[in-house]
Each structure stands twice: as C-alpha cells, then as structure tokens.
Image (cartoon, rainbow, N blue to C red; front, side):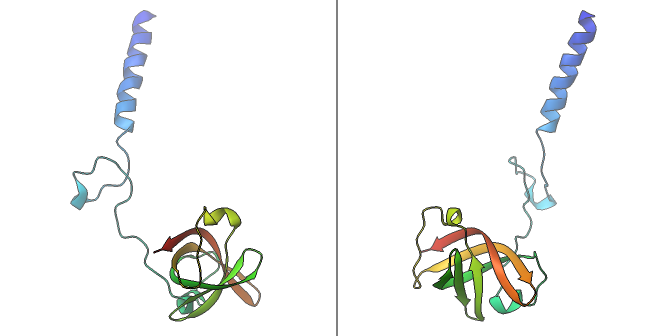
Amino acid sequence: MKKTFTAMVLASLSFCAVAQQSGFISSDTQGNTQGGFTGQKPGLTSVAQAKNLRDDTWVIFEGKIVKQVGHELYEFRDSSGTIHVDIDDKDWMGQTASPNDKVRIEGEIDKDWNRIEIDVKNLSVLK
C-alpha cells in the first residue's frame, strides 16, 4: 500500500511539472518561457469598416470621443466617420477624456434593427 501511494505521489508531481509548460510557441519564439499567444494581434478598425461588419465582431478603434449623447452612450469619431459607443461607468477605470484627447477603444459591434453601436470592453486614454 505504501509503495502504491508513493508511486502515485511521484507520478502526480512529474505530471504537474510537465503541465506547467503550456501556451502556443511558434518556431520563431523558442526562447519564450512565459507561454501564451505570440502571433499577430488584431489591427485597428475604422468606423466606416465597422458599420459593414457583423454583429458581435471584435473591433479596435483609435480616435476621439466628441460628446455624450446619453447615460453611458457617447459619440466617437475617427477620420472615417462617427459611431455611438456604449461605455459602462466601470470601464472608465478612473480615466478622464475630453474631446481633445485621443482614445483607444476595444469592444464588440452591437447591431439591432436599424442602429449600430459599439459595446466597449476596454478604454485607454492615449496622452
């Protein structure tokens, strides 16, 4: 019984050591020991492009919030046009932005009948 228990403990310890080496590693990142994805990240989307994308598509914008149009609803502008963005109070995370500040917005397209807006998941003020 003791030998069986000892063998099980040693086997589980060696499994844990092997399991800690996880994540995607491509051929050009052989020295990476932290794990995770190292491929190409999504690029910026323009407002004009976003208006033609499907519901729930992930988008990243850079531009300016020009005005507030409702509770947690704002008008966002980049060089291609404007769109409404829904920014929950918690997503501001203590940051403030004026119409003169450039911001980076990450979120999902929310299409409903004849309206489109962006449900913001991450907001960064770029100064």
